[in-house]
Length: 206
Image 1 (tube, rainbow, N blue to C red):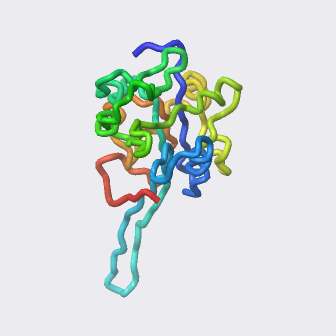
Image 2: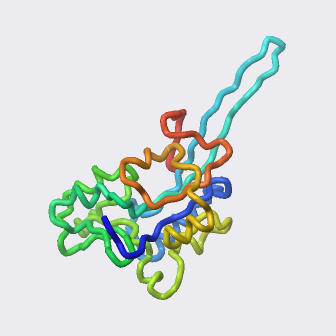
């Protein structure tokens, strides 16, 4: 899909401590109902302890965090799955939005999205998701998640500007799915222990 400008996110997993300030700030912005999280913090951990013959142990235990919302993908499968056109990609900024008046709450978009971005509001019976804080963007402000991060592990800008600042990143690391599914507008700086998807040991949303 062609847009005039494409905005996206940069996540530095070497800095993220899993504090969830971004997740809370996102919920506070629009008083999102309990059970719905437009931005989520995931913990990915693994490794093992090995007993040596002399009674000592060696270990390769690791853990890191990833903050994840909607990636406003170039090829959003949520848009393709939506039967009414409610889920759409804005031409002016590339942000993926939900037209609530067209949404029938069928959750087809949620089933299609590999990032679990669209989520059903059980009271209004419509899908909701990260909207890139477009109102703040119009005022020259950052999304709430960006400004709330105490370690400045999240950035948001046009993809051209992000690539100038950070390059192309290290690619998706677990627990994220392969980029080839949706062509997400997300640049990741990998934690030193960052594992590629497929090296799954265990992970959890914390």
